[in-house]
Length: 277
Ligand SMILES: NC(=O)c1ccc[n+]([C@@H]2O[C@H](COP(=O)([O-])OP(=O)(O)OC[C@H]3O[C@@H](n4cnc5c(N)ncnc54)[C@H](OP(=O)(O)O)[C@@H]3O)[C@@H](O)[C@H]2O)c1
Image 1 (cartoon, helix red, strand yellow):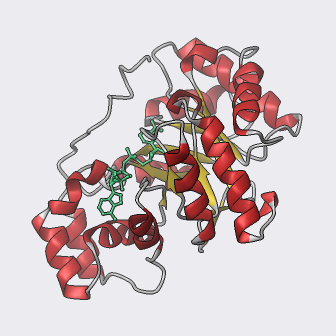
Image 2 (cartoon, protein in one colour; image 1 turned 90 degrees about the vertical axis):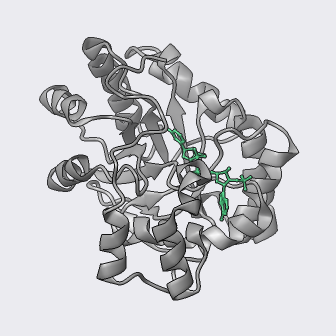
């Protein structure tokens, strides 16, 4: 596994498992357990996915089966908008910890900026308190645009370590990526496979044929080449294995440029400027 380093010098695995739209039953437990056995060290959970209990069971069983420690894993969850406001953050955090059966998270994210700037800032102050009190290892944001990050910058005492946003070959987020690089904030991609839609793209399939890899491996490797943290979701054992098998090959600069050129600024998720839960 390859790791990236945050602006606070902590590290995070560059690839992990997403668990959105996975039912809170054995499917979630087995996917997480299988991933850990196969070498995943990062799991991307969220309160709103309503599956933290079984994700947590998968974490415990995965730790036992792989013979590793909790500290070998990097577990993320996210604060939902129902718990926004400085004093609510701790309740959201403790609910996720309780659901997951953990006593700390490696990363806690504000899931969306929301449309109320004052509430967004106030909530970030609650995140800062969690961090300052040592309850969480790292704090970050998700779905923040430059305008949200500029607003945080004006009011925050702690910079987010990461911004998790929609990113795939049809939404390459060049200006946001440039901004994050300048600010020292790590970029993380959600729906890196565009919820499987990108896997049938002609260019992706051609490059996959050229190098003898699958379309999913090409797209995940393209994330890695761009220095982005990526969390493809799968509940299918052979795909879980396929998706992490991206650290023994690389793409040429020409192949990266051909994938970059697919950008259409096309979102499959909500617009962060208007979404409010
Ligand atoms: N912060 C946010 O607002 C936000 C929003 C959306 C997502 N996320 C996070 O990002 C994670 C990933 O995004 P996502 O779940 O939306 O979509 P995704 O990872 O882009 O795509 C998942 C889909 O691709 C399929 N798939 C996975 N690997 C494959 C492979 N090797 N070959 C063929 N198909 C494959 C999966 O099928 P099977 O599972 O059936 O194998 C599933 O249908 C989420 O799970 C969540 O953790 C965050």
